[in-house]
Amino acid sequence: MSNYMITYSGKKVNPMQLRKNEILIEDIGHALSLLCRGGGHLKYFYSVAQHSINCAMEAKQKRFSTKVVLGCLLHDASEAYLSDIIRPVKQHLENYLEIEAMLQNRIWSKFSLADLSDEEYRKIYLIDDIMLENELAILMNGSVDSNISTLESNPDFSLRESNAIKEQFILLAKELEKQMELE
Image (tube, rainbow, N blue to C red; front, side, top):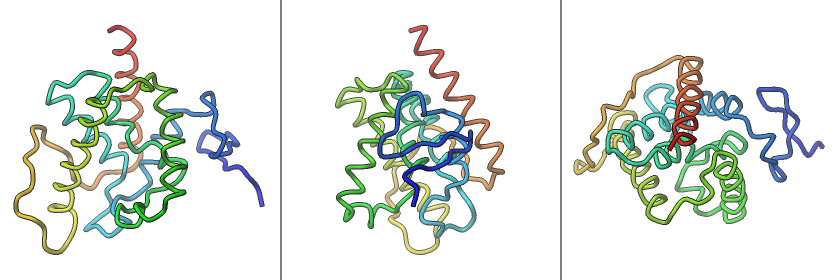
């Protein structure tokens, strides 16, 4: 049994000991574009990457800092190395939550987000929650709370090709990184 995974870029990495130089936006964008939200229980395929792009666009529309916009784009990046586990299950997997937090912190650090303030984290995860409410209403069957939060942006919940999402995710991440360097 091996203690590594092979990423899309061909790197052999141990997710439990992931180093900064092993974290590539191309690997994250590729993996997240192929991971379906909601454990796959949606009307059609909708990826974690598309969700993350929608979160970033909402933060941008709200005129949040570039740092928060990038944080929104990368808030689920650890799932590129762990996969997506639905919230009702994730909360019962204590060790998983520790591993996810450890990986996410390494990713935050790689992309100059290690110093996010409590307020910035609050904004990122508030947008994540609001986007989830809207996704549930649009992408899932069944009863949904009619008091869903209104979004300021116009998120793309359409069925899209994974390569197009991957490229959009990577391009947006690189643009935001460059913008942060200039600020």
